[in-house]
Image (cartoon, rainbow over all chains, first blue to last red; front, top):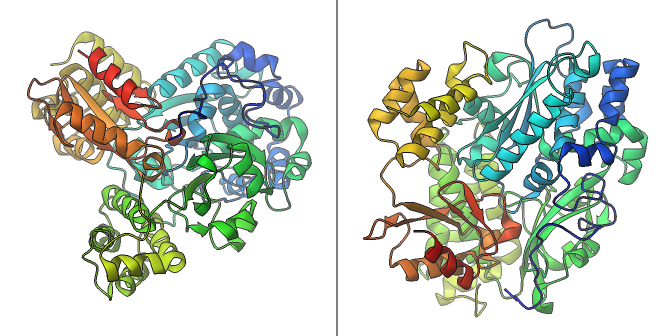
Length: 442
Length: 157
């Protein structure tokens, strides 16, 4: 890494550290995370207004639908629509869960939201709970970020003490208890039903769907699960209206999005931009290619998404629909940048190892298939590849994808297919010449 | 089996869940137990099982499923370094190699003096901080150049 140009982003940040479009991370300097700071930024105004005016829940859900806020965890499912799935008139306990189990390689935005603006998540969850008539919620936080978990607990204490959480919030009839839950190192728990199993004190093995969590969730009760960034966007939507949020982005792709840019750029980090911002501009915000090298490939949505060759990526806009057109997915917004010194066989090998490691072992195609993928890519990388191996890899991918309970199988298969599709020559070179096409790697 | 302070911490976790769902606190309880014992011997897991009213096998299942539990004794400090692709692109594998050289051990090994255990980690959700490593499951160290790694090793007694 070129230490000469890289300065770690440590608090306090300069104003606008997350970019000029920032809404969730607007005016965040890394130190102003406390309740008093959040209130100064207009925090909890949305919740207070809703409670003071007794806004009908249906109106909030309608506003959410107008906003075209799509789930920021990876699947991009419209949040307002998801909220409307909760059973109406159900009188038993319902639950709200925030998925902060951020472990998709390349993704590190939820950690920044939780440690630098935790009250935006708390307020977003409280508004969501009000809209769906929910009284209890949990935030499931990734195991490796203990200090962030502790800070979130502190923010919860602040919110309880000031009457933004707990019984009869702000003197209204609305009560909402919110707790933090600490994971302990399992990628699969980012899958929402695995997360629920984990919360119930079990192995995090995904459930078969349907039934979906809206009808059978935590402890078998109706449950809505959204990503951290999704909840953090909710207060802005309530304060400015769904229409205004939609206009920040593009039709069907409302709002801003925090992209985690990692890999071969001068300034890896989180950047919040309007949906539809050109990739070239995002790359520029991250300081451009490290050492001025050429962009070879980019994984635009986290390691589970198909890689996109550099020239196609440079023409692409950063929103769900544009990236889908380029043959990949926006996913969690993790933009992994690889320059022209990178070996694509070795890159794919590391990802394949990850899925092999993290497969929960429940479905045979994934449990056995991920190991098989890893072993075949490993032998290609180490000069023992066979001529039929590329077809074998594609066939393995075909036999995993769509044949498992959850999307981890797809996540293991899709990168394999895309890497071979776009960089077949490089894989073939490894097989034919028993060595790498690019001279140096990392 | 566990100290009163540890039990207090576990009780605080149990209180987050409905009274008939004490099992939801098992992950936290195992983490608290591990903090106190350094790892999770069977008798400790059995104690947690009894404390939460769970079958011991259900507790073993949890402990063996999640990567951050130590099912075997580890050194005084466990260093987990991320080598996944985004980290590797920014020096994660170099950091891991440097630690292996300095400590003279490979992954999943402990130094002869019992001071360090080295682990290869999967994504910690901190790729922008690469090279990144975790000390004893709790302390995340960011942008770990070789100089910073050397200093960290000297500081961790």
